[in-house]
Amino acid sequence: MESSRRLGIGQALADTVRAAKPASDQLAGFAGDPNFMLSLARGLTVLEAFSERKRPLTISQVAQRTQLSRASVRRCLYTLEQLGYVSQQDGQFALRPRVLHLGHAYFSSTSLVSLAQPILDGLSTAIRETCALAILDDTDILYLVRSEVQRVLTFSLGMGSRLPAYCTSIGRLLLAHQPPAALEAFFARAELRPRTMQTKVARADLEASFVHAREQDFVLIDEELEPGLRAIAVPVRSVSGTVLAGISVSVRAEQVTEAEMVGRLLPPMREAAAAIGKLIAA
Image (cartoon, rainbow, N blue to C red; front, side, top):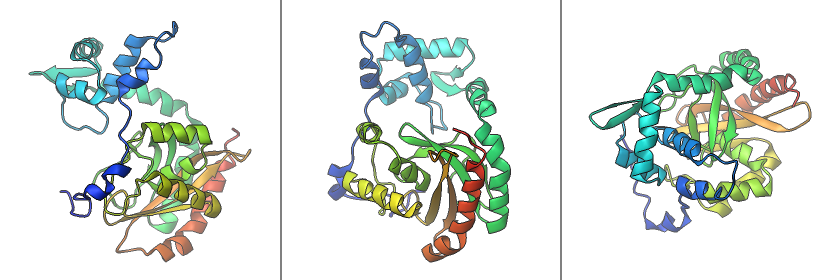
């Protein structure tokens, strides 16, 4: 159910929203590269079209989402179906469990997951709040570890879930530590749209929040991702000082004030982040 705080933002914000760069435009950038496999790239792009989509998709819907031709999408889906990655019924395509093999190889080979889980569980138990650890992946954050005490979002999140970086506490924190070239690429590709009445979508506002994040070394998001949700994030640094990930704690806004988040939650979060960071050599 969509809240009035989430929709009906109005034309006033329309010119501050930058649409995501179509996948077809990104692929075109590799034209002339003899080592780039365009067919493989198209297939992966089609797989990614199912992200955050719980219902099956038609060829037309995938083509619209990826901006690839219907003919290309049809061939990609046929190939993926033959390989067992998608299924189709009456022209409706859906992912099959085999796609989990692609992500499992990453998670099983990433020491950060096994190292962080017990520390995050301990943090969640100590503060009695939901905690998560995520990294920046293109324009999104990717959740690697989550310890949930109570459900605070209207939708469920788990290992491998993604959310937009610009309106999440971890995402904004990690963006704040990106070099200028990476931020330029982010603003060129990110789809900045208001999720609630509070969401910052203007580049100037986001850049100002990045400066604030670097100064305070934490980020507090107040109802920018979802009405009634607050979140606070701290960086996880390697022993060399590089920011590799972020830890966040999410709460219901009516239950925990911003002052309490900073006073009660921030110190143990920083301790947990430091404990994880000591285990990372990068």
